[in-house]
Length: 299
Length: 211
Image (cartoon, rainbow over all chains, first blue to last red; front, side, top):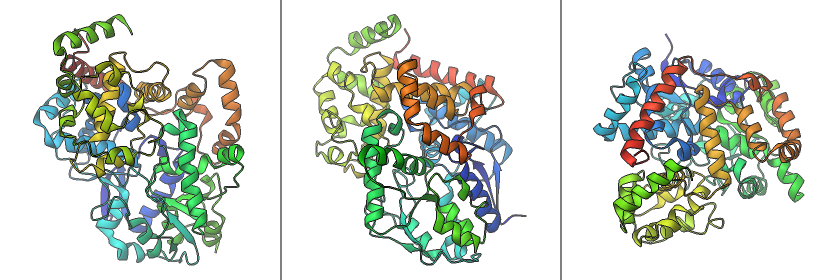
């Protein structure tokens, strides 16, 4: 039996050939080493994301999240729900808290779920993968299976918004959370703890609808990493990863910068530190290759 | 504005007369917290898109109390929200500002009063419809529909501009061209759609979107 088991909510972007498929591949490698068994919630659906508010409204958004809870409750009883995507975690946990707090809302939600023959009793516990790592394993527990040190790698920990606000990781501050830096140090890397853009918003979904406004945010995030001597940025959020990596070439084209800063997931750093290959860490999924990390993986 | 939207809007105006705060409290997500605002302005200084909007949350809350219904529901400021939650965690009165902004945007959108052609309003609508169609987001179709929103010519121009990024994602196995044929989705699509329809029906009745 695995050391820990969770009901897994992978989310739309992490699927095969989707924008964060490298997150899923590296998460699976990391979990294998830590002996974590992730079982997908059967037939899970989209969380509605933050930007779903406009057309989706309140109850439909909560109801679709409750559908996932109901599925987990029935098929994976007693297991915490774990999301890797920041937006999935946020939408699900927000729904969970609202449903916990209002019997009326739970009643209306169950009225909606009944249309598909489902029922949610309540009591789901929605967590982010980072919470699982820190709270259930601890930094020492994460260090134990290490095979290689990330020694010499200068890494800017970009926490972003939604894994940090409004819930965040227990015991961390909203303005200067330290957990990502601590994870980097645990793996032997050099955390650039003075990196001042660590909780700056990348623009989120507005990267599509308001590209200029978002690219201004992204420019600040990348520029500051360069200013602090970073060789790569690490993040726990798939939208942060995609926005900050993908739009660097656009910013270069429009503003004459020469950005070429790799942006990786914590799960990729961990996979490499645990002795995984570049393929295990899905480093072939980067638009801007993380060559220094590949080199360590190849050693 | 459609005929239904017009009827819903007229009914709300009739019902609440000049008490817009009461209307917001009854019909907007977390609207009952608006009156807790003490006008300190921390939200205004915390927004990453602070220089892009006309009305800060602080201003919107005061305008609600002052009964500025048309100005609030016609404002594009709520659509500048990136959902970063910075205002919300910093608010000394613990107003769920992000949720209220989302709620106001949804209310204005549903009544047909939100600014026409507002890019985030359009993208948000596109996103929800895309996610709901099969129960999971089809990233390829979302991107294509977004770029081609203004028609074929501007779409080709925009898509060509993003060509190298698209190719990069394709090579990195992070974009699936086969999604044009539908892509992934939930198996019990019928049940999924029935849940949304029922939830919408309950919400519409409560918030006065249906007569």
